[in-house]
Image (cartoon, rainbow, N blue to C red; front, side, top):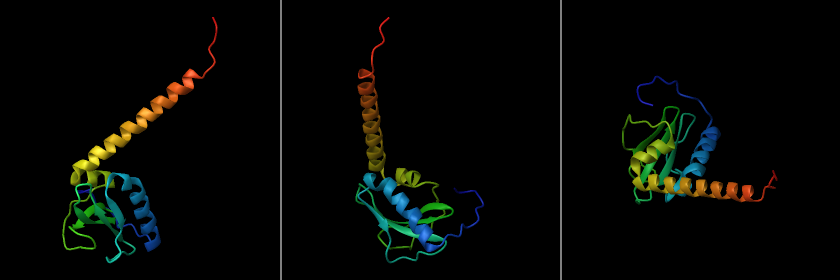
Length: 131
């Protein structure tokens, strides 16, 4: 999201928590751990999440109206200053974790195979029209 002028989106703390929980739900199967940070500043402009990648690297991730960025290299740490924002958690994880990419790809392939199998099964059970 770099290079754009964004107004800070004002959400109350509960709305940021809902946003963070949605992110956690979306990526939890492709990381070792992701939770809302319990010892960081979370307010109406941001929320922090603690993340462990499949490579066992630990990060503190900040979510603001500008997007996602790494602010620490351990849980509850906010001592890294970076202007590298990512629009989505997927883009951030794609940068941080090659094993995320692999897990996400494997999950996608599994879902597509299941869909294909389901469609083939339903086509096999359709009544055949006689000419």
